[in-house]
Length: 438
Image 1 (tube, rainbow, N blue to C red):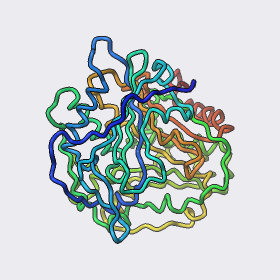
Image 2: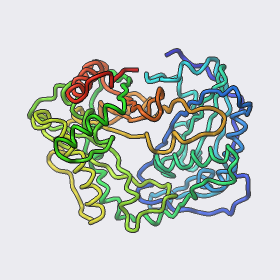
Image 3: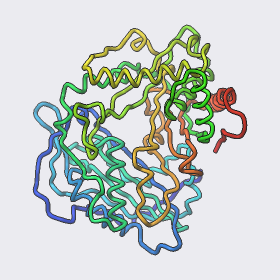
Image 4: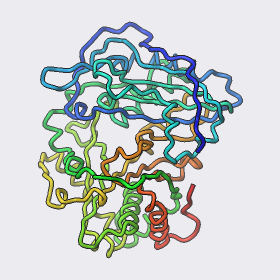
């Protein structure tokens, strides 16, 4: 992909449009351990019939939605015990208006890592004191074709991925003329108790050994049509009378193909790690508008020989049982600890898998254009991961409703073998053109 050249037109602080009482809000124990940023690019095609200025529209909507999401306009401050809290000071979020010197064709299906994409999002320097951090930035960059990109960066302690999607959907509703978000945001971080953190299995991340060195990591993608998923679901139903989710099917395909293509020895173990939304596992379930961090970490583990000697059904059952175990242990308050398999796991035998298809990003319709692509900016950073293989499930920009796009980061020498193994595994169950590369 060619380099972008972006010119900043204006950078301002946008405060809530109404005066709000100052307040100090507490964060949950889970919020406190997520001290980083979530960053995403939303790519919109220009619509010739719409004359609205997207930067002006989104800036005004941001000012209005901050009335309901006042923590995003505040600042963090340290507590004596080392935790952080939010001071709702009304200082404002960062808003940037910018112009790119090219059209959107360079971004429509952009997968390769490109440092110039960082120009599409406002980020604060790493050395910034925590009290000076902006908790939200919104950058609107216009392109020569009339399309534009909205770059969002928010401090992870304020919300998780679903919470950010909820915020973006609310802002887009206001940009289309709504008086307030359709879903009332709920702070109430006291609903997540300090002891809850123990049962969310974050040890899966903590016990991964840090890699000493990495081969060059590349990004690429594949698309799996929904017909493929449905075909495999039907095969599994006929084989064992069990229903499996789309996520479980795709996760199993990735796990098998990665294990085969990397030629991991039969005697070793492999692990698939992914986040699980735990909102409905609380007692009582958290209210729908809760936008704080509420994820658990699931870790599916198996021996290479046993995993590969079975059909995809074995991988599916392990993944499904892992999800059930995480939720069941959380509800029953059974404390899990790292096993020997976890402690001795090699970092190259671990997969990180994320799923952004249903977080709400694709529903962020600001009324100024058609959303054509969602680009996770966390995935755009080379050599930052604990593991060599990271995968993200997105909706296909070619067919938002029916395609699953797997964005992947892995060692350069393994990208082609992985794609070949994915195709080989799929073809065991599916015939026809249900698998394609971008």
